[in-house]
Amino acid sequence: MSRHIARSFPLLGITFLATALFAAAHQPLTKTLGVLDKDNEVSVKLGESFTVRLPANPSTGYSWYFFSGNDPWKLKSRKYSQTPANPRLVGVGGEETFTFETTTPGTGYLRLISAQSFDAKLSLENVWQVRLKVKK
Image (cartoon, rainbow, N blue to C red; front, top):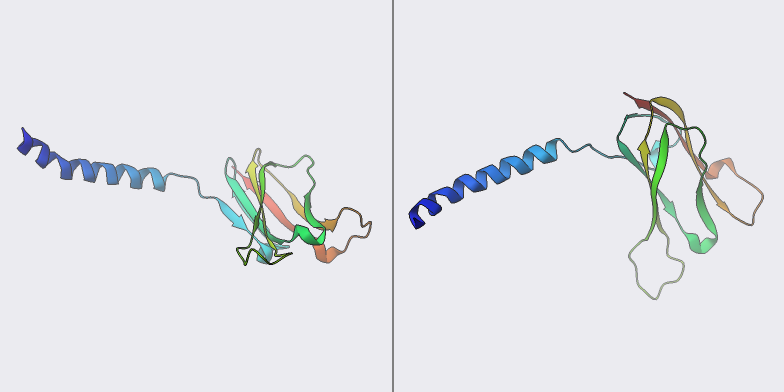
């Protein structure tokens, strides 16, 4: 009986590996957008998620603001990660990550604005936007 089990291990390993590779190949890819994508046109498939990563430093009072309307996507999550640095340093920046999910086919502008909540002035330099097409 132990001989039969010993012969089955390689077959089980190959079956497991093939299943893992098949599952990985059929996972929807998440498109990641960043600073270099500003003012570009981007296409995403309906039902896919996509991520926007932008530099951030909340210690300066600036935050990224997302405004939503009748867009073919919705915000799923938002997370700030500080850049790893010496723990004694104050004011070290990081990255703000927004994850969106497409909901319907359509086109619109995804805009994120970096601003201080107490400042009424808005600079176009602080606006990150892409024209986003959600395709079937």
